[in-house]
Image 1: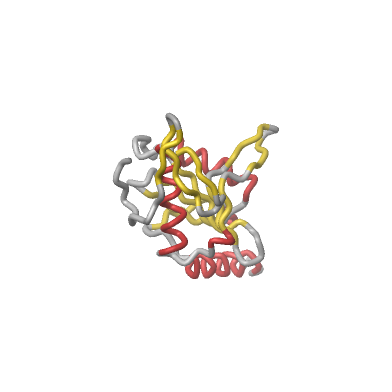
Image 2: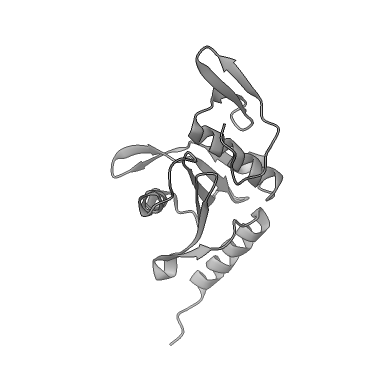
Length: 166
């Protein structure tokens, strides 16, 4: 599998007929190790082992409906109350992160409502903070730790609760 711009982890790869399988710690089962799944598993381990996201608050391939169509997001990180905190869109390393990828995650987020977005192909990572009061996103130069993500959420909620200054 391709080397990524994410820390390596102790992955378990096995062969099952024609498919290369990888152990998914969140779903607790073997899944087909596609190039996108390779990235997804690296992101999961990075969030948990390096950025402090609780494993129990991560959810893979969660379904949602957008414009009456069923869609699946790659990964959600939830806050302690079970609300979306970080929405992650994973692409294979060979797929460039274009405006279309940014539009895809922003579109998904119209129904999810996460305050943080991350698009990654495992080599390049783009992270944004959603600023709903201004109907825009702000690109971040880092992927926030879980503690930083909660702080950003708290700041955003406080700003939204402030009465408009005249």
